[in-house]
Amino acid sequence: KQEVTQIPAALSVPEGENLVLNCSFTDSAIYNLQWFRQDPGKGLTSLLLIQSSQREQTSGRLNASLDKSSGRSTLYIAASQPGDSATYLCAVPRDSNYQLIWGAGTKLIIKP
Amino acid sequence: GAGVSQSPRYKVAKRGQDVALRCDPISGHVSLFWYQQALGQGPEFLTYFQNEAQLDKSGLPSDRFFAERPEGSVSTLKIQRTQQEDSAVYLCASSLLFVRGDDEQFFGPGTRLTVL
Image 1 (cartoon, rainbow over the protein chains, first blue to last red):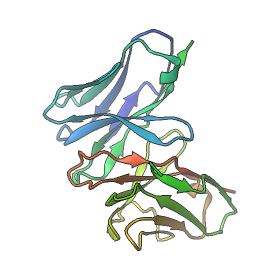
Image 2 (cartoon, each protein chain N blue to C red):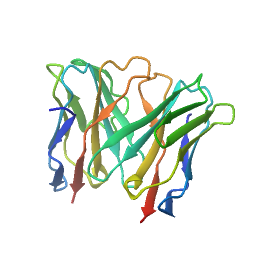
Image 3 (spheres, rainbow over the protein chains, first blue to last red):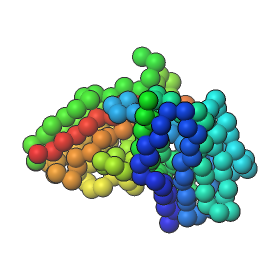
C-alpha cells in the first residue's frame, strides 16, 4: 500500500533563505509526483508535476527533484519570500492513475 | 467563472442533519473529483466522475455519502444523518480529461463542514 510522508510538518525560516521540503513514498513504482500549495480558504494550486522518467522540474524559484529508487522527492525554494507562506503537499497517483495519495503537508512560514 | 467554485464555503450542521455540498467545475472539464480533508491531513479521495458517470466511489466512507453529477457539469455531494466525524473540508477538483494521471487537477476553495 502506497504511503506518502512529509517531513517536517512545520517549518519557519527568515525571509531570503533557501529551503528544502521533503516528500517520501513507500512504493517506488509511481507514474508521477506532484507538488501543491494550499493557502487557507483558497484550495489547492498545482506547482510542479514530475513524470517518473524525469529527475527534476523547475518553475521560477521552485525546483522539484525526484529519486524513484530511494522513494524521495524534494521541493527547493530559493530566496524565500513572505508570500511563500502556505502548506505544501505532495501527491502520487494510485495504480488507477487518477486517485491521488497525499502527504499530510509541510506548513511553511516565512518571517519578514 | 474562471475556476472551480464550491458552495457553501462554510456549513454548520447539527448531528443527524442532511447536508448538500455543491461543486461547479471549470466549463468543459470532463473529470470531476471529490476529496475529504481532515484538519492537519492531506486530502483523501472520495469519488470520481467522467461526465455524468460515477466511475469510482471507492473512497466514500459510508452509505451515508452520496454524490451525483446528473448532467455532467455541476456535482453535488450529499451526506445524510451527519456525524461529528464527518467534520472536514470537502474539496472538489476538475480536470479536462484525467486519464493517465498527468493532467492537472484544478481545485475549488472547499466547503468547511462542522458537525455539532
